[in-house]
Length: 198
Ligand code: AP5
Image (cartoon, rainbow, N blue to C red; front, side):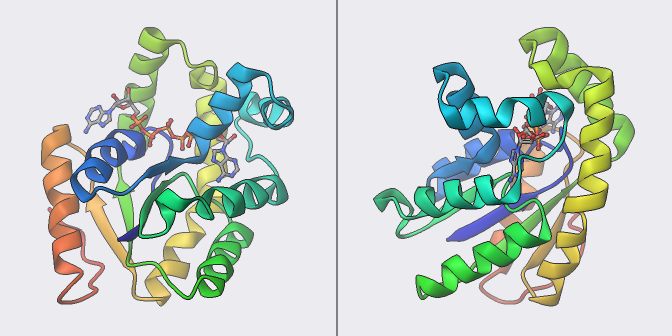
């Protein structure tokens, strides 16, 4: 399975990707996690991403696309993957389409996790207090939400037009959200609706 998870900051992409990738036995590939690992290791990639992440802005497309071209060429991604946080802009989506075409393959499904703004603000405030992630400050969370609305939300249409989109209600207990996602993926074999799964 080749799956993309899309949704605003705090929608639960990382939480769900962790669970679902284990169930499907595919690698969970998170661009945010890759950048944070590079930041911790002090690599050039990490240094180049830091100012964008701290501001809540997207790291430039060319940097992300080059990084993902390398990552998707690794052997563990040959038979499937779950992408969390990529693509996040039209150029990234177009680059992913091209990369997969070159590899002679394509996506199976795009899952849009839907959560209202009030809930994501609440979730990230809790996480900021507990884990201290530096981009969970009130100001940066607001900027990340703006960036999502402006640059990433349009991808929902891109994938709906390709018949790949499944919108999932991502509010409620984590395991209930997982169940909705798995139902959407099960439905993938029979049809490609984009109904919100309640
Ligand atoms: P990234 O790390 O991808 O952050 P994000 O998209 O803002 O997402 P989050 O990690 O904040 O939230 P999530 O949806 O994964 O939710 P989570 O499961 O953690 O990106 C960070 C930065 O890196 C970007 O701002 C950008 O600068 C850069 N970047 C990354 N990818 C890029 C790209 N492709 N292009 C350019 N730049 C890029 O859950 C959030 C919280 O809610 C947790 O505390 C969790 O425990 C809790 N929670 C989860 N599910 C539930 C639930 N059902 N009910 C209650 N609480 C829940």
